[in-house]
Amino acid sequence: MRTIMANGADLHVAVSGPETGPAVVFANSLGTDLRVWDGLIPHLAPGLRLVRYDKRGHGLSQETSGPYGIEMLADDAAALISALGLGRVVFVGLSIGGLIGLSLAARHPGLLAGLVVSNSAARIGDAAMWNARIQAIRDEGLASIAAPTMERWFSPAFRAKGLDAPWRRMLARQPQGGYVACCQAIAGADLTDAARALDLPVQVIAGGLDGSTPPDLVQATAALIPGARFDLIADAAHIPCVEAPAAHAAILNRFFKDIGHV
Ligand SMILES: O=C(O)CC1=CCC(=O)O1
Image 1 (spheres, rainbow, N blue to C red):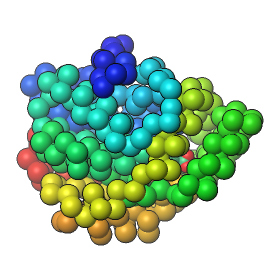
Image 2: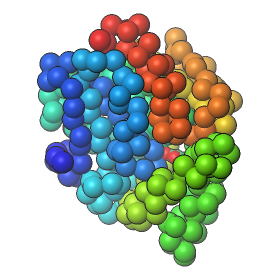
Image 3: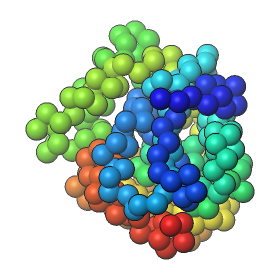
Image 4: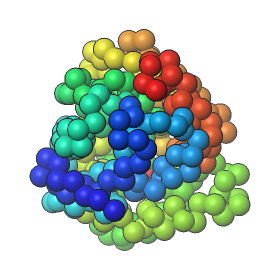
């Protein structure tokens, strides 16, 4: 367990792999912490320096007062990459992590060798939808949104086996203020122009059964980004690193190899 002070917030990080290996930084989704990548790690190519972190207001990272903005969360990631002396990294962002990655690539291009935008889009939902979710959480707490959230996160087959249970607990245990502040960041984020202007290797990944960022939305974002690759994991929903870790890792490994980040 390690924390790093980055951009004014104490961020929880987990670092593994050889110190001199090419670095990959993983940013997870709303309502999850860095354990969401645990099942993916064993499928990744050897020799990489792997850095997972809890964004501000999630997991064991500091919950500063909100609202947050995507630019602030991107600057947190930039400060973390610099503080750890990682050189140019591939940034893998899941959902809000993808928004953070798009903003990071626009604001700090020199830090990135490549970007993976997984189950994310240049714009996710709209202000009315996020405000309704924030109100429900303030009225009834995070556990009250767990059932519909599991339906967006995981496929019917995964849920039928009860495999969503630990992730439901993870959601309910996130700091409520941090979750709300990240909803506010998503509500205010439109990375459309930033996506169009990107000039780095980008891999976009969608889940065929994703109820939060449906595949058409994700593919439309891939179409904005010059030269971006797009892959679909047909039988996974919003969190393929949990539901289909081997398939998710295979796409990442191919991207790392193709861009020489090995
Ligand atoms: O709808 C959800 O809870 C999933 C989600 C949207 C943005 C994000 O990071 O996760």
